[in-house]
Amino acid sequence: MKTYSVQVGPVTRVLPIVEVAPGVSVALFNMLGDTQVTEAAGIELAKLLPAEIEVLVTPEVKALGLAHVLSRESGLPYIVIRKTQKPYMIDPVAREVVSITTGKPQLLVLDGLDVEKIRGKKVAIVDDVVSSGGTLASLRLIIEEVGGEVAAVVAVFTEGQERPEVLALGHLPLFT
Image (cartoon, rainbow, N blue to C red; front, side, top):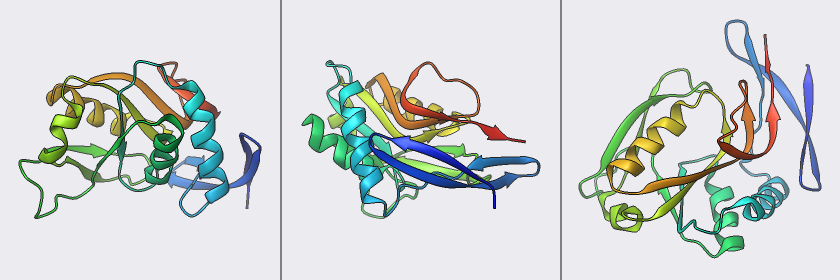
């Protein structure tokens, strides 16, 4: 199996290169369950956060632990945008997105109870990897629709094309 090495703060990981679409492979970065990488990434990304940020917003699952560490390090609250609509949500705001890692449409849902935590605030979107930008665009739409301002995007890595608008710790190439 081919691999690709990355450095996150003081932590090194060797990532497997896996095919995500015909002829397109990625160095698979998965923070879930990796406490060392999650802690290191959160500590390093906290140093990059602009001072005007008031709230962090993250998509559900893989970046959730990162948002928690970043919240702890920065003292900022965080909000999770879910990938399914739950029965308890009140007036949810939803958008559909196609991510490079899933390859199929998925839903992003903000619980209406969290809208006031974003409205009028300068927001930083927190994600593990920003690749095609589909998830990022949908998150931005939701945040702006409810009256928040996306003032920063932070991620452990960007992937594929260069994304100067993302404050990242590194860049992962696409393999073709």
